[in-house]
Length: 319
Image 1 (tube, rainbow, N blue to C red):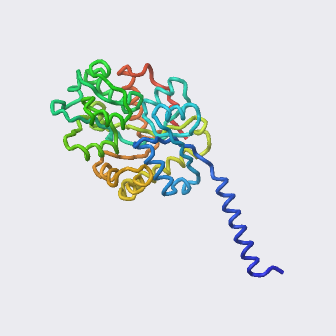
Image 2 (tube, one colour):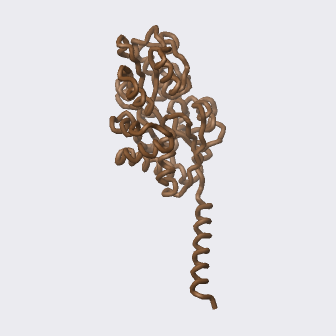
Image 3 (cartoon, rainbow, N blue to C red):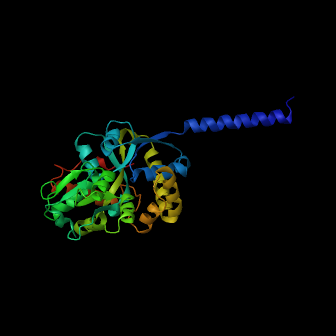
């Protein structure tokens, strides 16, 4: 007859096996991230650190990429199921045959800025005849280009664009090789902290509000069509992202601490960006009221001749 100790050992062993089985059954979602000090790592790292993925019944597998072009290519070829990217980049990828869909909103345009230390440059139009460091393959550059067209400025023609990712754009401006730099948070806050002579002459949310009547979206959650067919996994991912967004509003100190530990940013940078509302993570289903705003961004990309045509309506994921 088994002793009490034997029964306890068996019960513990069974519990461990059951827990292991449950962990193995938890589906994986492969998400792209960047090794640059930008926004995508913030979302995935906070999600993993706070175990929001486990809370919603999946395991987030983060795959890092060293450049924005490789980052988007990972989604196009199926190395990852999801990433946070520019809506007009998704429009372009869809036009080129990539099976991508937009499932939710992510970051507002408020964290996109153009900085300069030249007192004569006060607006984007003042960059005519000057040099701007910007990542020409990014969704942010597309937003700047669309706005510029609305104001009668053609990027690459009226303004010389030096192709540079966000950290390099920061370095180019600091070295005086360009007149202005297009950057995003948290780099914006780090630059303003380092050089008090720097000024923001362009803010994405304010610019889009001016031409469209809404603040627009800098980044959205994009998923592959094959992943979209995996039951409620897209909804689970959105729910986990909403938990991250809620934490950025309720406890910027904790978010800052996680980012300091995972991305190795200086303490206080992300908290300052969140507090100043330059960094706004707002996750809403793309198939809801924000569908209209996203679609208008597509329309403006076509009107500015940045892209040839509107995408098929199925680019917006619907459960």
